[in-house]
Length: 244
Ligand code: G3P
Ligand code: CA
Image (cartoon, rainbow, N blue to C red; front, side, top):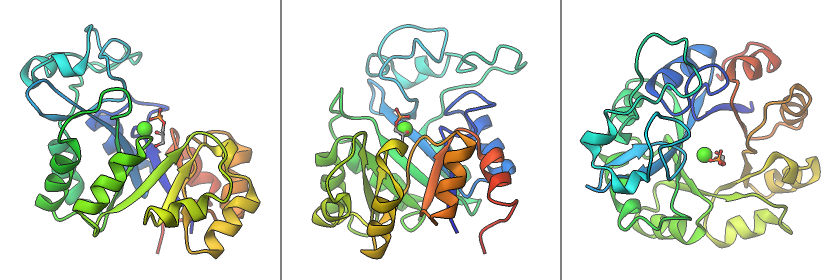
């Protein structure tokens, strides 16, 4: 069955990358989450998509210039102004602690292409180990050097390269870096690429799949997973069925 991974949580209906969006994704039928990790000035791993806090909070400036305590004062409600309660930028630790009590999978995306956060991989791996989540987490990044570095430190934790463009035989590339799957932009995942990858034992989890027809196509071709902003819609198109 094609798994449903909620992109930044249930980002279609709730503020992205917040505990609220993650908890609502679980309720909506997601099999797992996708989230983004950046690092604060004092080395805390935090869950926020952009290098800057500007777009998703009332604040300004780079995450790397904030201490964790200061960052937590920001409100990540984003465009969801009708929400009555303030939403904090979560620490990765907080998300994983909650995740450990669920059956969800999680794709942790290291946001280290623009800012090469020193030591990020090791911190993420240690945290995954602390919560004994090695078999439920996939580390991905557009920075492929970083995921290979992660794999060398922790071969028991799956890695997946993010591919924004089509690649020639991406399953061969994935195999070459010891990844068991890859995460292409949905436009770079035609049926033939998915079929050839699956035949080679390589999983394909396209992002960010929000259109009904695309979700339907990917379920029909039995793609490994879809990364979507709208897990409720994906769950409905999948036939309201949970994985066995
Ligand atoms: O993990 C897939 C997707 O999240 C990558 O793009 O910009 O939404 O982090 P972005
Ligand atoms: Ca992401």
